[in-house]
Image (cartoon, rainbow, N blue to C red; front, side):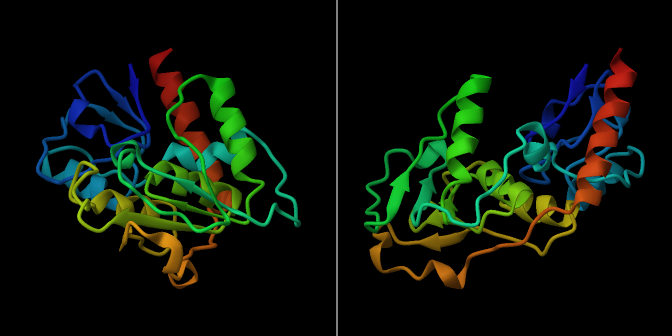
Length: 219
């Protein structure tokens, strides 16, 4: 079997073919006998080695391929608004939004729902999110995005936070960590934390080749 996107390294078994998987903390054991084609980033690779596994040199979260999986052209003229997307663990927080913010739900699973969601996302000027894979999607398409968490709820998302830097280093971008913001977002200056960098096409090629190799190993 192939094990891929997500912080699911703790589920790796000796029969796993690993491609782009990461960890959310370094207090887990990664099985050294699995076939490691790639991992999310160098922090996961370091733990693989420490657990007696091979030296992994191919990095990249498969989520960075979203712009190839769902190819969309982002218009130069967007809708003038900001998309706000919470991590599901933040769903019940009483967040107050500025007037130009529109909240989009991340709670979906069907392929068409995901395609519709991404189709909406690219129409916005920018995105504010506490969900890492929404942030990754934005960096796949080149959508300006702010990665946040909420004051008082910094521990709601599982892990120590190393997954964010692991992802960014794995795709060749500057380190990132979510910024703790107040529940009242109406006066917060997001331009101070916004990122507008983009995953390179060369990195997307590398991730694509790793996935193809992994598929060949489980066929």
